[in-house]
Image 1 (spheres, rainbow, N blue to C red):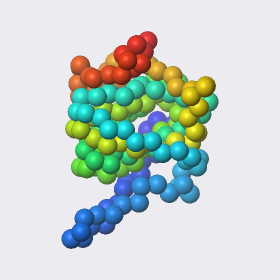
Image 2 (cartoon, rainbow, N blue to C red):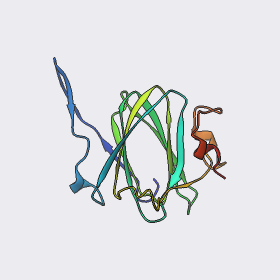
Image 3 (tube, rainbow, N blue to C red):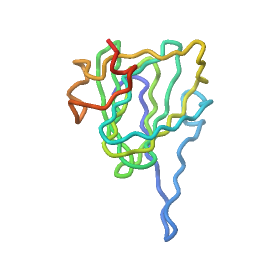
Length: 154
């Protein structure tokens, strides 16, 4: 497994009303999270690959739908992927030095708990192409929907 990558099963307690699950417990994480972001993505969207030089780590969880998380250790070139969401309730902790992204396998609502507040004046956001040869085989699509920034990654 990639150095520093952690997987946390999200235990669902269900009854006739629905279910409850603990999403984050800072005492289990290597670093405390300070900001939470949400994104909604349509099926076929890939967000990433991103990495953070100044050390922002991310805790990912797919709240509805299914997403494929892809992580690349830029030092060892080891790659990892896991599908998370409705069919596999799992949170994934990714040290920010690793390139990471996700693919919406269905329309999905995705949460990012991060260890650094976003600074628009000096963003710590760096990109690699989604189809980097070290991870290209891990995605389910060869023609994703990308943001303008991600489509310019080189």
